[in-house]
Length: 72
Image (cartoon, rainbow, N blue to C red; front, side, top):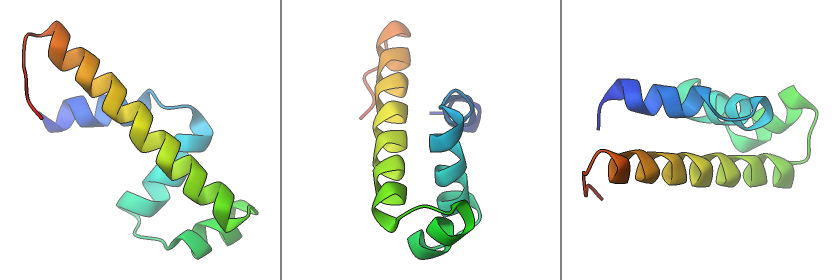
C-alpha cells in the first residue's frame, strides 16, 4: 500500500471523521484534547475515530480487490 492511497482514503472521509482522525493520528492529540478542541464528548470522538478507521478499511479493501491485490 502506498502512502498516496492512504492519504486519498483520509481525504475521502466526511469532514467530521477526517478532522478527528487527523487530530489524533497526525497531530497526536489525546481523545480528551480533541473533545475539548471540537467541543464534543469524548465518546463522540471515540465514535468518530472508529467510524473513520472502518470507512478507510472498507475503501482500501475495495481498491485492493479492484486492483487484484490481496494484501491484509
